[in-house]
Amino acid sequence: QYMNINDLIAIVKKKLNKEIIIEKIDILDKSFLHKTHTGYQDGKFHLKLIIKSEELSKLNRIESNKKIYKVLDKELKETIHSIQILIT
Image (cartoon, rainbow, N blue to C red):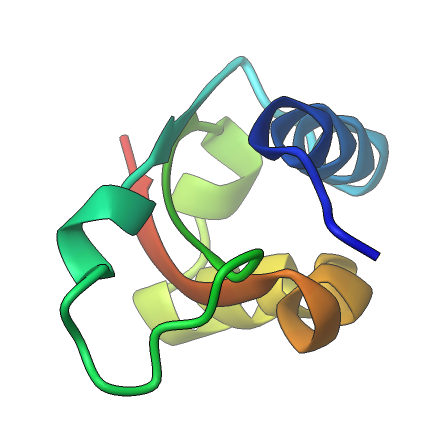
């Protein structure tokens, strides 16, 4: 089914906050940047996550990204086409 970007952002925030200690999280929809790319599909979003998290900043980049990917596994299979992660 088609997912609304605001619903998706709400789900992503909720799931990440449940599994990871996050002080602040901003999620930006970057899908418009990819409209012209091959493999672009409607209903598949490109998100940029800006996360302020002491828990994540203690991990190295690969571990912190892995943790986020694990939490968002279902969304990455179904509605998120790509994800950009910035941990501050």
